[in-house]
Length: 129
Image (cartoon, rainbow, N blue to C red; front, top):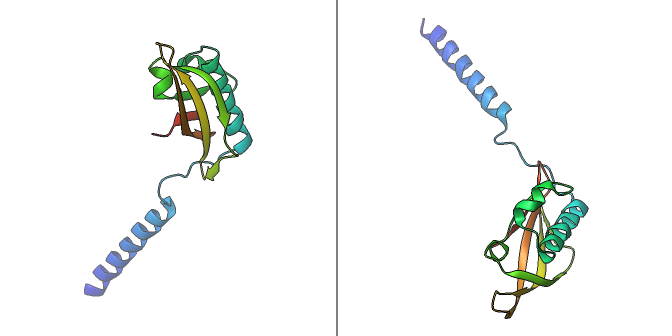
């Protein structure tokens, strides 16, 4: 009888191991599409420069979610320069950008920032903090 209980226990453990191994953990995001990421960043920054709001880009082509605290706080984008091709980070492209901003009093601020741009399952443009 003891061997039967052991067989059931070992068989049960085998099933648990099989199920857990089959799950493979959380799904991985699709690799970033670098050209789409660069194009999305340009669309977002051009939108900011022309006076659009981040929410306006939800209806852009492609639709995108954008987050930049300077943009949200009302600073104007005067000029920008993408500095290099960016660094592929699996599901994102990290792209350095030099920004020239103007505050409501007319003072210009210069900053080098980095944007984290994803392309799947949707396009996202987030400024790294």
